[in-house]
Length: 154
Ligand SMILES: [Zn+2]
Image (tube, rainbow, N blue to C red; front, top):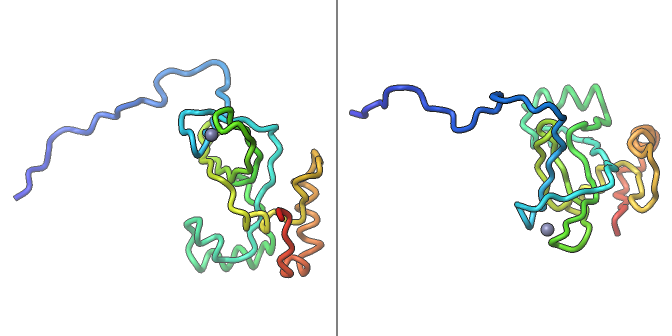
């Protein structure tokens, strides 16, 4: 017989305890140096999903993923993007795949090269403040061309 401990677990940290007046800045940490905050110029390249499998990888059921891709042939994620971030400890900027969990918390990992194929026809070397808008339009226009596997990162 297993004894069930009585009483509720005490939450170790109360997130809602004290309200901070000033808005908290987003927190991005270097994948290689977990204590090191890293910064970029804020330019984000949002990811476009084109297959139901990509949605399933993000926790969606197969059926729902099918429906969504059918309704939106090019689905732009608002909480995942590629961004070039500088780490002082690495001493260099690198392209990172950022996943936003809330205003402050983010997951950062080095961007695998193939993710650039999901950033529709945006050249990361060209400065363009409306890149995400642009790419959304281009993604639609160049849907057929995307299949040719054109890369931006080589
Ligand atoms: Zn680093």
